[in-house]
Length: 388
Ligand SMILES: Cc1cc2nc3c(=O)[nH]c(=O)nc-3n(C[C@H](O)[C@H](O)[C@H](O)COP(=O)(O)OP(=O)(O)OC[C@H]3O[C@@H](n4cnc5c(N)ncnc54)[C@H](O)[C@@H]3O)c2cc1C
Image 1 (cartoon, rainbow, N blue to C red):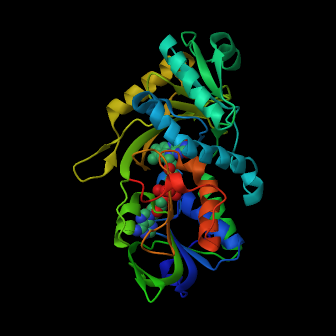
Image 2 (image 1 turned 90 degrees about the horizontal axis):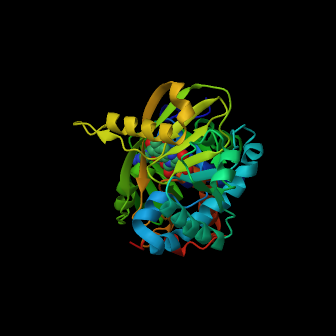
Image 3 (image 1 turned 90 degrees about the vertical axis):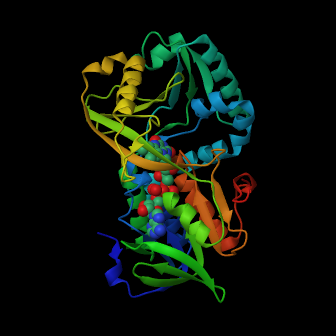
């Protein structure tokens, strides 16, 4: 184990405290620690137990079809900064495993967003053009090329948008690898500590937790589902929605899927992990039970599997062995929220909605630059906390 339970924590004063031990927080703590900051990460549960450890491991680099279809061109254009953020993060993913000295199982030969109707092919063409505007080399492929690239896709599909920068990685190892390397260079990783509120007292942050108070010059909120409550304690309302969704995994089978597969007609992501298991998801909603807990939605599961079978009929004999639920978060415009709190200098927020696993390596770099240098290598105006 590389984390400390709160009982063993004697140090309470740090340069920077990062709140939240998912991939965003662990990447931020890592980047701060390697740049020499005296940093602690506080996590309510164990590391990587929430969205970052429950996601489907897709590395996204194209505009998702559902919001494109529903919200239209104006939305898609406004989302381009968020898309560029993903593309820059994908560059970091290429060598991240070496940097963290861990096999993150980064791989895949790109993403295929397949379509069964001529009208969706037209929509994909417009989407591809937009992606090309920000330097993403996606392109439309016809039925023949689709079936050469991915012969397991149903012959009924007419073509696809192919995005070569997409792929997959293993979410179970990524955040822990960031945390382990952060700890090696001096970060304190403290689990089992819930932050209850944050106050600014005499220019310093007092972090009130269920294990006593901590103090820091600066604080970074990467608490995802816990973010609105913490931001509120510093006077900022963030319109972040809860999105409980399901992912299913199958038994292990011989390798036959090399791409990240999506479908334009209905929600789907579909890929094969290095273990041989297929991961089937795409944002099908779970449901909340009477006690407020997110639980399996059987209708969603059936629909998700029906759509996967429609796109890839040959999987009919492969057994699903487990379905799980994770609560992700959304913003109204799908762009991330990244920046310093307007009325609380020294407090920073970082959250990338829906596709935050892909974004986390860059988010960690950007937040550490903001904290240490008050600067960012990318333009953060589209991600301003006050834009809503
Ligand atoms: C089922 C599912 C599938 C997904 N699939 C993909 C995918 O394939 N590709 C992709 O790019 N993205 C995907 N996502 C989105 C992605 O998982 C998230 O955007 C990303 O993991 C968010 O990372 P995070 O570190 O911000 O949040 P989290 O991983 O949720 O981490 C936040 C942490 O903060 C802690 N915390 C909260 N409040 C407090 C507090 N008060 N005190 C202390 N700690 C606190 C939580 O316990 C948690 O560990 C998916 C999400 C879900 C739910």
